[in-house]
Length: 195
Image (cartoon, rainbow, N blue to C red; front, side):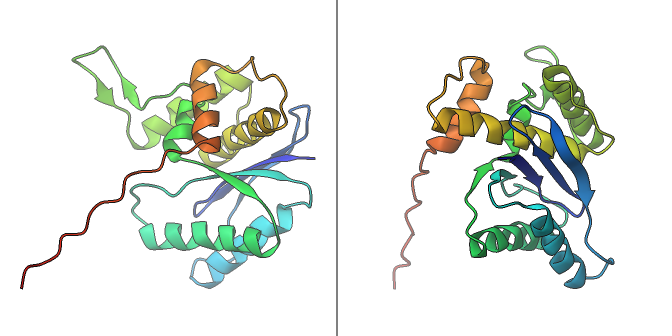
């Protein structure tokens, strides 16, 4: 069995690790060319070429805001559809949960003077935190995110299998619980126009 993390993006991060936490494969997948739908289609195929029968998979959830919303949405759904068609089960971790798993909140500074991490700065903070938490480093922030997702997959498997996961920090345990026991958001009532 392998634990797999997938971070869908124009440069998709992919990590597969064994049960001992050894990284077997960690790379960026890019697809072919720069024009869609060829790039997206070949990128989805490339992801699926790396998936194995007994993989336990965690994929990053949909981004809340993105400059390339159409591509991101299509890629995220394309990978999920390909996994579904081949009979794979997967778990989703929200983008903020990936950061939270290495204790990154997105903010820096003292209360009353906090500043939000943005763009490349935020990615560097997550990369540093992954190295501090797990001893893993890579030049690609996409691969680092995929590594964190593979760690989440490993810990999800541990909890689902009934093994003791007492080694998890409180923030990691919260992430695992939020994935296994998602809270349903109340549906907004539709306003009916009066005629």
